[in-house]
Each structure stands twice: as C-alpha cells, then as structure tokens.
Image (cartoon, rainbow, N blue to C red):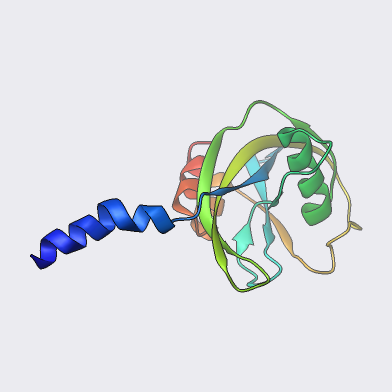
Length: 152
C-alpha cells in the first residue's frame, strides 16, 4: 500500500506541482593556447564557484547575441565569435532574490575569444581563469556541463 501511494505521488501528483524550466544562455569561451584548447571560467557572484558566463535572454538579441553579451559583462570578452549552434544544454536550480529556487535549462554556445579586456562591468565581482577543458570539467558543479567540457 505504501509503495503504491509513493509511486502515485511520484508519477502523477508531484509533476503537477513542478515548475517549468526557465531558459538561460551561456557562453563557453575558448582559445587556442600553447598546450591546446583552453576555456575561460568565471566565479559566480554569490558562492564563488566556477561557472561559465551565463544569463537570462536579452530583449532585442538572439540567443547567441545574449551569450556574447554575458561573456562581455561577466568575463571581459570584448571581441568574440559564436562558432556554431548551441553545443548542448545543462540544468541547475537557481535561487532567486526571493530565496525561491527555480529550475533553469541553459543553452551553451561556443565563443572563440579574440580580445579580452581587464576592465569590464563585473570585473570587481568575479575572478576569471583560463584552464584546459578537462580541468574545467573538474571545476564546475553541473554534470551536464562537465560532459560538454569533456567533449570539447
């Protein structure tokens, strides 16, 4: 009986209360270094964990354009080229200012970095670091993003 109630809750009732995923866009910034491809990670403003630049869609910009804007604001990528369609997605829970967590699906766009600035909008709020894709995969928390990095 208990197993049946648990199954009914999991399969039928619980999904009715689940919020739909919100959408974000991210820039997987990369360059060719002396030892191969490198990716640019930044720290989050709240916890200081390593992430890739990401944010909400921006009115008047398509998804790749919004990803480039986030790369500028969060990592100082002054000139970059989106080098293809989204190369994958990853999901995580974002805590809003209200304290309420919301599920987020993030589209990841590859961005070849051509020019990096030292003075950018969030320079005083974040750190940034160039690392190999394999090392980056070990530094980020989200399993799907780890896989995207390993596949580079």
